[in-house]
Image 1 (tube, rainbow, N blue to C red):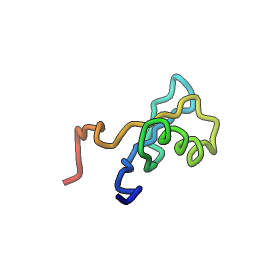
Image 2 (spheres, helix red, strand yellow):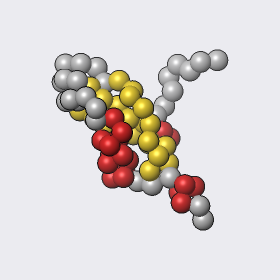
Image 3 (cartoon, rainbow, N blue to C red):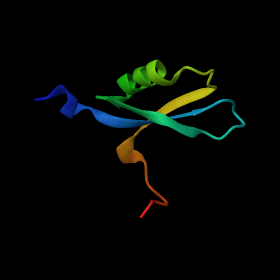
Length: 67
């Protein structure tokens, strides 16, 4: 089995401070939540985020989508 086939796409979100809205900063590919968190820090921690978090793409529910 291809190792990449076992990976899932994780959406990465961040906010600068607790009052700011979280916004999408990118994606990572990982086999699980712990790896996704590590990869997110490695890839997107170029700023001093107050919060940085990941969610599996499958858990993101589009509310308004481009046609």
